[in-house]
Image (cartoon, rainbow, N blue to C red; front, top):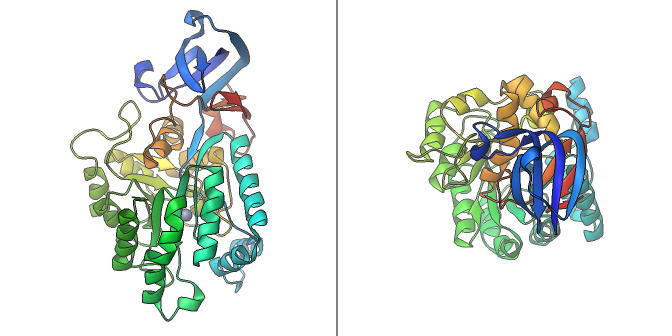
Length: 405
Ligand SMILES: [Zn+2]
């Protein structure tokens, strides 16, 4: 059965066939069939279909692709956040409190929390989400987190090397053997990706050699690589990500010229996936997570420097209980526009097609013919309203695989 979605005042396709940038079609319609996009174009030239839905003059964008989240965990860290915001000392334990709560939680509790957060994301227009482990830091809990994440999304990431847990504080080599050995073996069947928090400036994170060992072990186990890098300092994370062929390096808050050159060079001489062309390629995307800088009151990454160098940029939430507990891609877009000087069009591209490139997916993040029919309907006349009306719930309905969610 074919379905016409019509009376769309502005349709964002990310399809170069409809023009540069976002491939915008005014006064548009979309035909959906068998869960895929079958046609897009001006409503006046729409083909006949079995059924039709009038979207009431709203704006339609591709569903957001949130390529970085930590949405399976237990407990919260609201007191830590309040202390940080008010400048009060806080000795609550940081990530260790989330690790303890996640280890102690039942599988049902973890699953219910994960399901609720993914539902919350979907209601805000996110139709593809990546979810990491990393709050178990033991074999049983890491593999439990990934089993649950796999029920929620195909984009699951093994992050046993999130931090070194307290019981291994004096035996980092022992923890690395666990992460690259039995823990990897238990987790790899439930994961598509391997990740590491590469940050020599943080004592419980991982240095360059440790990070390389984690990523290489994951690659040998058949996983694809992504990296947490350059969040707190201009460390080796970005260049390591490029070295191992990672799909994305995430945070990129502190970059050297050599880092920017390495990212641009990872796409070779051809164009990477940028607004107006290209698709997933072999290079490394720079994923920026400005909700973390917002929630930790830190300087934002320099998106313009990356864009000027031709580096594909993705935007994601990093939704997690410690450094940034927002699940809202609209909020991230607004931050990118206001605080990082991305244009509204650049920010939306990065929150959709950019996220898809960071996950090496060519079936989401755009509305070209053949794409998954994942659409977010905005109660607004244009995509600019995402940043122009921050904090306002503009998402009026969401379609996932051709069905109203
Ligand atoms: Zn993260």
